[in-house]
Image 1 (cartoon, rainbow, N blue to C red):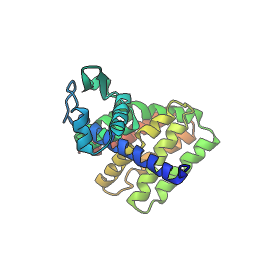
Image 2: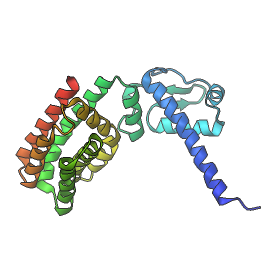
Image 3: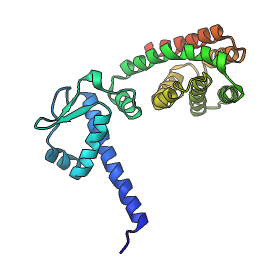
Image 4: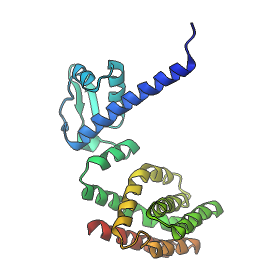
Length: 238
């Protein structure tokens, strides 16, 4: 009897979800420090019992963690956690996992440092290189910020604004960076909005960035973005 395509697809989804769950939980445990760098993971049989999964699912999960630089497997040695410097934190899943287990202030400041290194220069590039499409994207996001009636609308528009700045750089290597940090950046923007006197307190600073980019004034765009991020840092440190 031929396989039922719907059943086959459903089983594949369940299988993928199972190995994703195991990778997620083991990844969190490693990033949290429950299993230290250099330490061996529990034996396969123990992990299979703990997560109630097959050997195939477990090995797929371990392959996922290997691809992210968290663990390595060697014959007669087993699977061990790699040194921290080998971890690929510039991976969407890893960054999300790390944001969940790292001390909140420590993580927020590390993300802020990354933004301060990149976004002012990105604003200058956007001023020099934007085209009609990327400028329209930025204009829509800025207008959405101005029109926001609540925090959720503001945060969505704020996130889109910063992603549009990266897109306007005309540097295809920067666009994936936006996709990488999108989830964690949204969380930081929401926290900043909550800490402000009103959720849209930084509208004027965003408008300064927008006006400088529209005017193709790269120096002003760099300064305006640096000023905006300075406000953000002040709220984080407060």
